[in-house]
Amino acid sequence: MTTSIKLDTSERDRLRALAAARDRTPHYLMREAIRQYLQREEARESLRAEAFAALSESCQTGQHLSADEMQAWLDHWSEMRAARMAARQG
Image (cartoon, rainbow, N blue to C red; front, side, top):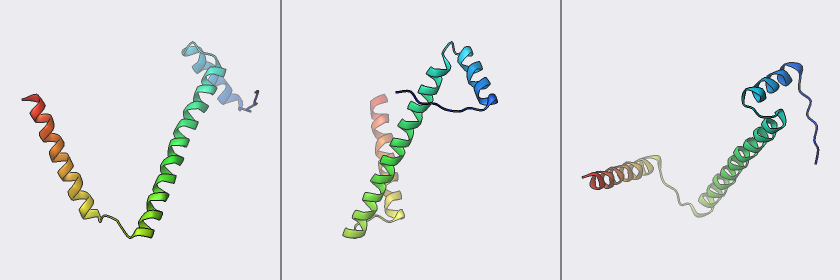
């Protein structure tokens, strides 16, 4: 499928210069930019949906952790990880 995109002169010139510097075509750079954008935005949307589902579940069940409880868990996890790494090295 062919899709058109209108670039202003400056953007087109910059794209051509970058393509030449990378020994790629402007077409390749545009496709790669779109691919990376889609990956990033799909991941962001997935994270947003996951967070919304978690919030919805928390509202329904009333189960949650306070900030202090979460910090205590993170501190404990960090200490355990450091101990495992030290055991591997020595």
